[in-house]
Length: 90
Image (cartoon, rainbow, N blue to C red):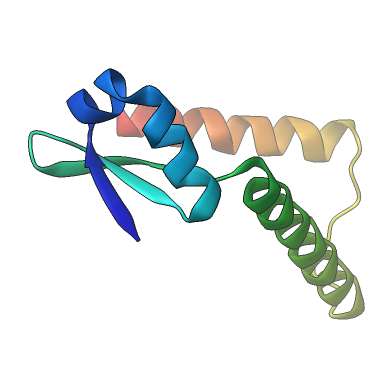
């Protein structure tokens, strides 16, 4: 996988885009990786794989009875758990 500094990517943006069409490019800033750029085709394939994986997981959860009915009470409980987690992390 190709690596390029943010300043080089900025100065040579055309070359940077061309490189990302061939393979993912890691962008570094202050010697640390901060981003990865992939081609649109690779992004679409990755997105499709994530969707397919999510559907597979969802079907497995249904088969294993790992689900809960969504009603007003369940929604309120989930929201309360989320808020409690959010406030305790702050």
